[in-house]
Length: 128
Image 1 (cartoon, helix red, strand yellow):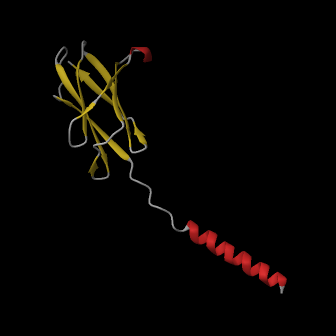
Image 2 (cartoon, one colour):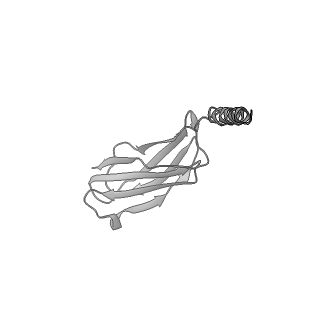
Image 3 (cartoon, one colour):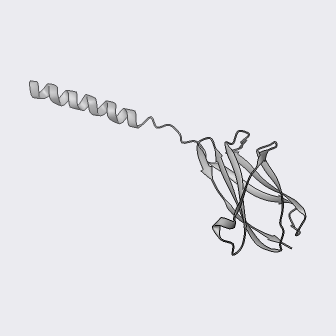
């Protein structure tokens, strides 16, 4: 009889454990960062807007903790990279105005931290 009670208790505990595991919460959607420049064609020594549009699913993220652009010319070392904090404008857009001083290929990483997540897409731009 005692063996039967132990077996029943074990089965009951297993049922609770397995039942608890099946109630998984849906994971939040990841943040997405889309980069663009305004104007699209960049000219040396002319102002350009670097824009990161941050979304989570279909929602525009207006409350990012940080959006920073890391900019460097091809061939430069890490200590030559420039980091500039972007300002939130509207519609999930974070912007900074920048002037490229030389022609060539540059890289821009949009370091974005929002809603407990980090995304850092790397983009290539050509300055003429």
